[in-house]
Length: 139
Image (tube, rainbow, N blue to C red; front, side, top):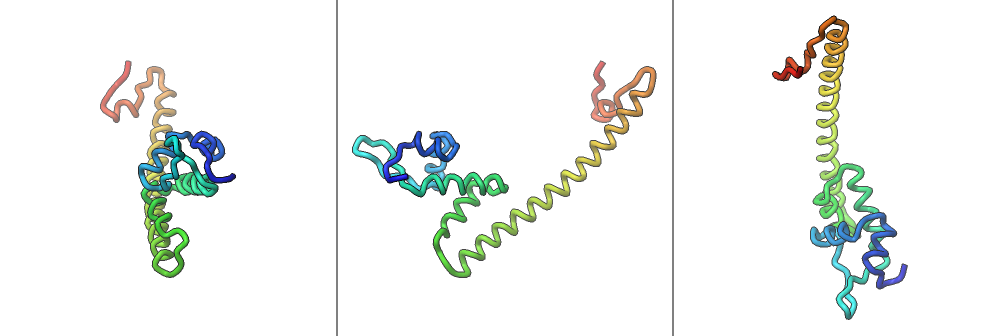
């Protein structure tokens, strides 16, 4: 790509919408582009790669705030930027581990409810134990 690409072109190449690009600009995750004489956005060569990085980071569970923090240190060498990235990733791992723990507990609860339903359905006139437990009984 050469300099001066329009928002629609960039959005198409990155697989996002123009509104997404404008939103990222407002948040400061994506730098504001130069403008043409007519006031249109003119994007440089690097914007598609940055958009893809943002998408990958979000797919890995990072927030846009996290991405902004990561990008603030982009291109900087040394221990301080690397420590910030490490600390951010550690914090996300703690959150992921907590979610996994919660999901496992929820899965056990769902399994118990499923077994209760299966037992109830073997009765001639079943009463759903899950609905009873939740305090409502559907007719």
